[in-house]
Amino acid sequence: MQHARGPLVSIDLSTQTTDTEDITEEQESFIGGRGVASKLAFDRLPFDADPLGAQNRLYFTTGPLQYSQMSFTGRMNATAVSPLTGGLLSSNAGGFLSRNFTGAGYGAVEIKGESDELLAVHVTDDGVTFEAVPELDGATVPEVDDYMAGEHGLDEDQIACIGPAGENLVRFASIMTTESRAFGRGGLGAVLGAKNLKAITFEGDSAPSVEISPTAADVHRDAATSDSIMKRQGTTSVTDLANEVNGMPTRYWSARQFEGIEGINGDSVEAKKFKKGTCSQCAFACKLPTKDEESGVETEGPEFETVMAFGSNAGVDDIVDVMKSNEQCDIYGVDTISCGNTIAAYLASEDEFGNTDLIHDLVERIAHREGVGDTLAEGIARCHEELGVTDYTVKNLDFAAHEGRTLHGQGLAYAVANRGADHMYATFYAWEYPLVDPDEAFPQKGLEDKPAAVAKQENARALEDCGVLCRFSRGMMTPERLSDLFEADYETLLDVGGRVVELERAFNNRRGFDVEDDDLPYREYIEGDLDAAIREYYEARGWREDGVVPGLGEPVGESTAAGD
Image (cartoon, rainbow, N blue to C red):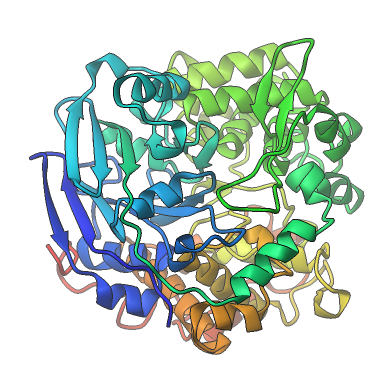
């Protein structure tokens, strides 16, 4: 089986020392990316670690396909215990960082401990160095990039950093790279903030030489010649469809259609797009560099999820206002989805939907934990009672745009996902809009035959995250091509994905997660027996009826992982 190469470098911020270990066994079993990181976390990270404490560890990993020149591979993975959900969570980001990461020659980087001073860590093929950076205290993401360029000759493609939000432990702070690309959901930026790590950089020419199947050239050619609308509108191409099927969260989930959709849809984004944008080596080029000449706003995006969170869910119908919110989130280092949704909760509590001046002020207040921003920085699950609004989260993670009250299989996927209400964990919405071949699609309503299908799609997404492969390769990355690229039959590959999901579930079981956490705040909208569907999903995975992985997820009488 094709897999990532290179050792693990463990970086201890408390002592400013490093150790290097062989992880070939983990790479052979879990390919790379999310799989290897989840295995390392399960074995090495204390199960009772405080997400914002020294015991939490964060893993950067990439996969074997980052050694190729294939489209859809400009991505890498980050994994830690989430400050937002309290469970093990992986997030991946696009851009250009992954090739610089592989160039440093490591297969995985582990960040542990915490520093007494604000640090930058430089990872190269000559080793790891530590730099005190007190001058970057409170710096925005562009300011960090400017510093690294001036002091070290590094560009934004070599840097992963946090903005003020990460330093201030905003529970949905992002790790940013390539200035506008984010390890977004779950607050991993706050993990680095708690460790006093402002930035980590990667540089070198020691990427392993790996022979990748000629199938990579076929994928690259198809990406270049595709006429997908995503090349013009990115994920916002689905905005009108979502609204048409009564699936566009509006005014803090009080409605499912937005009357101002034409002001924030894919056409409105395309009208502001001024050049092509892409990730490393990718010919699909679906990114969205946008500019508004009148206001001077220039950003990348917004994507569909941001259009929902800062658009329809906030009662905003002007794409330029959404672009401004998107730009602020990138500058300060916060997840656009959770930030927008949490602001929407505040707007609901104050009856201020559509107040863009207030929205933009709140983004800044959240990033700096000023005034009401300190409350909102905790996320919806922790502040909804104070605001007097419904808690629209699963496992403390707020909902993405694809509406589970309309797409019931996606609703089930939200309920059971280890990450919480995240659309990327199974991407089941694609089978219900549908965005796939009609012969493969499911009806939007009801749960019949969907639990096992959700499990299968979770496994497929986990496999992609081991690769690491972009979700938008769907349709081009057939089972046959995946088998060729990873040098294993497809069912074996799906089994790897299933074991990754199981490791995450077992880790979270050890932290107290069980069937009680697999629920929806709007279960009355779901046609069919949601509890029975959840049990059917557990059965498909071989888990107990209480949502616990037999043996692996059961307490062992000790609070720490086996490795420490």
